[in-house]
Length: 103
Image 1 (cartoon, rainbow, N blue to C red):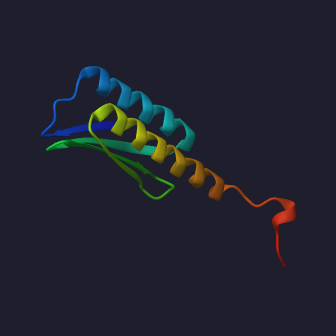
Image 2 (image 1 turned 180 degrees about the vertical axis):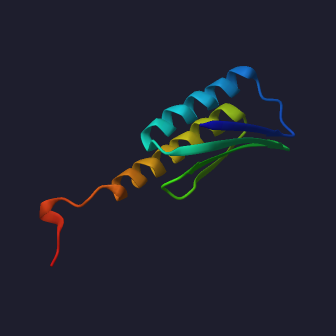
Image 3 (image 1 turned 30 degrees about the horizontal axis):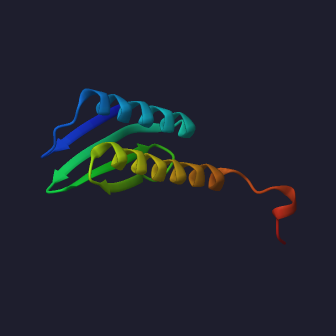
């Protein structure tokens, strides 16, 4: 899996980059088919934005965005949102249980 980190008008510390990579790898292990991930740090004015995008071979692209006054809380929020999408994607892939069938 390839992880691409972009910083637009932003100074991103090495520890924050490592934290982002660790979170992406943790999320990617739950999907098993992630081809690449893009982490974008955008700093315009007072607002700091983190955008996360996961692209895989067997599922649609997952995308999460979060804004905050600093990058660390924005990253945490974006990771949480992406984890929610992954959980939803995993649930939708599973076949329905015996009692859930209609017809």
